[in-house]
Length: 315
Image (cartoon, rainbow, N blue to C red; front, side):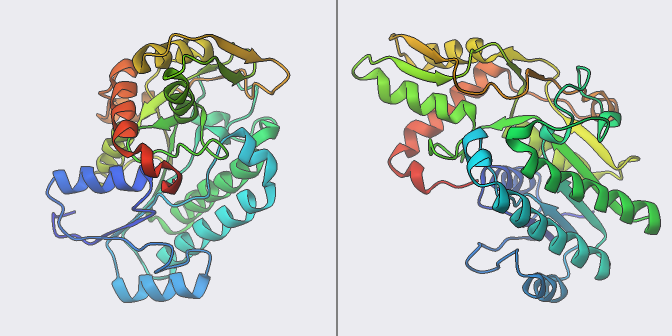
């Protein structure tokens, strides 16, 4: 790749896509392209094919997806399955048929079985059943991983999948109806701080989760842009995890909330633990830079600057 290589970032205005755009721009890449959902409906196969045919990018980075937390996945299983399949299949198939040089597919750690051994290795894919609360999204993402693997196997093309752990950071989604655990906590603690109200949180607080700042994922994508990776699937994580209770207390401290935390054990916890083994990508030269404390401080700073329009922020 050269700094003038044309790179299309699908989902360039979301949390992940905008972080990738920032990382590439900072590195000197000056031929980036993106389209909003109003300009290009990625669920429309013909529209996607026409766009890729016209633009002829050297690289496609698929950071577009319909995403959400446990509540959203449980409430809307069909769109989480079907819309994600449509988006990724249209992009992958167009990239293959139009001979795009490199395709980078982004997924999620939820592709791995609910009770897989920890830490999660790439080899654990499809070895057991999924977590029921987000299996619709997971099945779609597994299909994307396998499609890229099939193209790589059959045609020798540079199609690679990166599976990040739980992401957070600037441009996150703070809508309580559809957000993930960390942004939801940031907003809840912030809004309760003024009156020192208690904060209610789902579950027992005992599950363990790993969190990766979105800018660290963007650096992994940049690494994949600039190198031909030898395998088709790589985990992207920090290699350490915390309990949801510890996460809540850390966010509470950073926000400055001093009220009570009330855990609702009638609500689901989700997967007991999700720690990823990212040693394959680390061995090639990538490593995360943000500590959890510094990363949450950065995310809360962004939220404070944009809280008036957080409901407009979509992943």
